[in-house]
Image 1 (cartoon, rainbow, N blue to C red):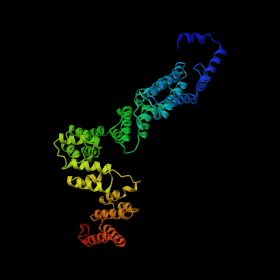
Image 2 (cartoon, rainbow, N blue to C red):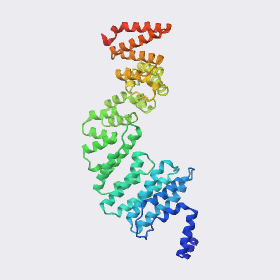
Image 3 (cartoon, one colour):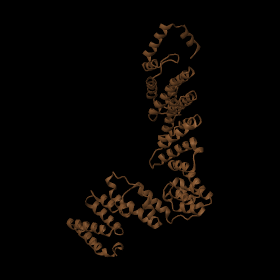
Length: 451
């Protein structure tokens, strides 16, 4: 604020200042919430509602052009400064309310705003820094725990639920560096409990980052059993592999490599080799299903670098797999099966085919065939239910052929239903197909599962 403005305000008496405030409110009604926020010299505690209302108003009206976040930062900065004024006046609890309210309100709206250069995220980080200052000036255990819970809320939002938008590390630093041993143990337990579930790679990333915070908090005090529990929960496989090998549990370390996601297996194999277990590492990579991922060029390069032969006709198999993923129908499934058999990889491909959308009826023939190829008789029969006419007949014959080696009686029952349907249909083509199915039934005794 310029000196002329300061001088002008100093010249005004109380009534004139009140009149000026009313004039400002008439021009900008949204500033009314500021009137509800007590000044540092006042004796009443601050309430979060007017602060939250101001933050919400700023964020919802900031716009969505590339300068929007700069405007929002400019308007939010004075609110952040309120916390500093309260802290300087010794009102730590009020400063806490201001900073937690701003931070949590921003997070509530963050995904719906355009924070082009992370200016609004920076506002949250300033609030977290302020909460750290509140922590430094607070000795009451309950008050400290409340502050730490708010700091952790920022970390959890950014690192365990969404992120990362750059708001996790300032919060993590406070949790690690501004806390007592007892507080760190409590925050470590809260972090472990908050690790997200799910098999998606994003959930795994969140778990790993949460686990690293746990290790920063209490890693030095953990025994081998507790450390392994944390590493397993957070899927920090590299660190866990080192621990297993150091404990002489090499077989478990090898199993860890074999079960790792395709994106990690090569790095884990390198780690196993550095521990002196070259052949098990090579075997784990060679047998890993990640090699069949159409995008995992890194793993195939690893095999070539370590003189491991790639499966024959691998390019054709990967092309067929990519085509099936794009066009998930029975024709592309049969082409994939043929390519996988030619490459000697069919059992592996079948075991690791991704689940196909169970809500889409058009995928029923494919799901039925996959279930039959896996020997899941009940699943295959369930997928046939609801199919009609030519779609049912084609899928039924496909499933019956697959079931011949798993459950001959189930296959025979399906062939008989198909035969009855074809005979009832009555067309010349249907009669010809009925004769073929009858021949298949007659050959039943030759099926391997009925010998």
